[in-house]
Length: 195
Image 1 (tube, rainbow, N blue to C red):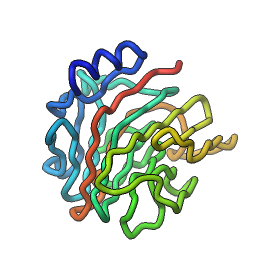
Image 2 (image 1 turned 90 degrees about the vertical axis):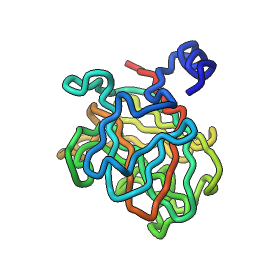
Image 3 (image 1 turned 135 degrees about the vertical axis):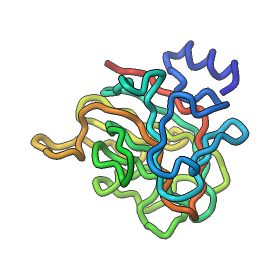
């Protein structure tokens, strides 16, 4: 993130979670080589892995409940990724807590960018590959709103009585490195707390 971007983020209440230079504050699960910083962006390209935002103290990571998350994202053709919300760090496997906001414009899985995986499905890509787009996720209580480039894709209200680990509560953000054939870039990853 540029100094101007960091100043702008501070001015409007958004806190940058990525410094644009390193993976400081982020902790990978299995296959850490999947994650690199290239030209000011987090790039995931490699075997399955998840990159969790743990902040400056991984032993006591910041948790997020109500927030407005925004990130600039670019998918390469045929790529799949995702942004997990209300997750928990785990050493390997697919995250078992929270929800995944899908990032996929053209990969063979028909569930496209902006979906909440296995909950709300969008089958029309809201963005194109090889082009930066703005992904925004707002969580307030049991409501989730997902937008791409300022267009609201959906607003979802979690029903009462949802049990298990796939539910809104609080937790970490995580980026998904889905498979070796997928390459997705993330930059300007920032959050504003709403509680």
